[in-house]
Amino acid sequence: MNPDARRHICFLTGTLNAMAGAERMTATIANALAALGHRVTILSLWDTSSQFPLHPEVRHEAVFPQRPSFKCAYFATIAGIRRHCIAHRVDVLVQVDPMLELFVLPATLGLGLHHIAWEHCHFDEDLGKPARKLARRLAARFCRQVVVLTERDRSRWLEALRPRSEVVCLPNPLPFALPDAPAPRTQRTVLAMGRLVPAKGFDVLLRAWKIVSAQAPQWQLVIHGEGEERPALAALIRELKLEDNTSLPGICNDPVQTYGNASVFCLSSRYEGFGLVLIEAMAFGLPIVATDCETGPRELLEPGQDALVVATDDADALAQALLAVIRQPELAATLGARGRQKASQFAVEHIAQQWDALVRAPS
Image (cartoon, rainbow, N blue to C red):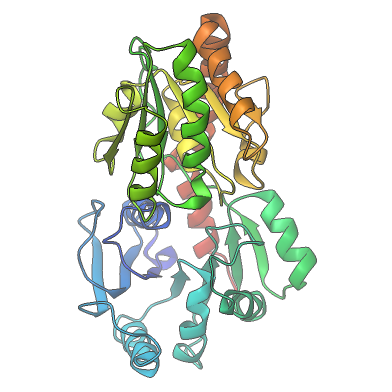
């Protein structure tokens, strides 16, 4: 890269010490931009540990060693962000959540930074934080760009906020290289993956699995992830008497092996910001059964072409779709092959080039 085109990019996030989608994408895009020759730092609000590998040239720092009370530490947080930006001569600041605008706007006054807000959930979800609406309004007014994951979400930002900022749709990339070959799909395993929270609809999946297991008792359901709903989901497994064919093995530390050992992937979410797990499963040629939740899946999937799609919160419909791909190998193979073709569009090299153009854009 021409040294004149190189930028010092800082990704501001809560923490990288959490096995979640936004954190994973922060590491993935930071690594890709470092590989393209940019100077890249990640500034966590707390904790310099990372659940994800970082490029040797990516520097990771934190404002606080442990998570503080941000109500008490609000001004200290602002000061820490400002010190970092000045000390490292940051050119581009990417906040990995519009909520961070509440800190970033006062922290960067007068610094003249290229300021980008990166949205990871859909516009109509506030994740229980009413202040998110204010933060989005500020981001729409004061950031140079707001990056969203889907065209539907881009439309919502434009309709609701009439932003001064440019709203750009950049989908998440595959966080690993496209596998050379699809999964063999020889094991009778339906895989689901995500945080164990109500939004993921795993309670609906378990009720659907009760129906499926009665008709396909040789199949197993594996739900990878951790979260607040583990006790409730474990209790539901016992209530439905699914202990022999359902497991909750926790966080997935080896996605390549996990997808490679599955035969079907199921997404049962009530809502998604993007649905990266769908692209990951497609990369391995797994047939997809998914709910028609707004934004991500609705935009990523072509029902009947590369996935079977059913209504949210409908255990019976979800069960019938799962049984269809279990009982019809030709259907499963067709869905998997078409999905794998689509996944190739999300290679990290392709998405990284779009980010590169974004951070180098003149003011």
